Length: 131
Image (cartoon, rainbow, N blue to C red; front, side, top):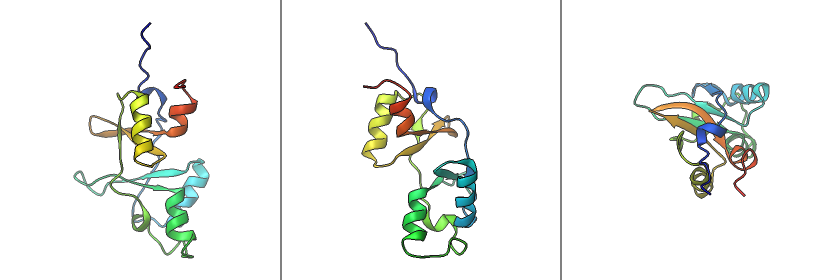
């Protein structure tokens, strides 16, 4: 019996929350807290620019551990860029392997050059029966 393929687009979170790279880390943390998320996509500055991402771990490693003031640090200083994206049509089994091998916990979902959502290891593993 052939198992049906579950694609990344089937498990992704379609709400995309973003922030400007020039915003302060304090502003990013406030937005994360308000929206109850652990990451924000960092907006591209122009069409040829790469997407970035800021996560809770970036804030911990870039601001909290070194003891910096979150109002004195800009998002672009601690974000990850370029960000690894996952194709919307990718089988979730391969997406899980890719995300794990890259040692990340989440990735923006891309379709035809546009970011259309976010996928996390949690959504890949917990929301569908891979096991």
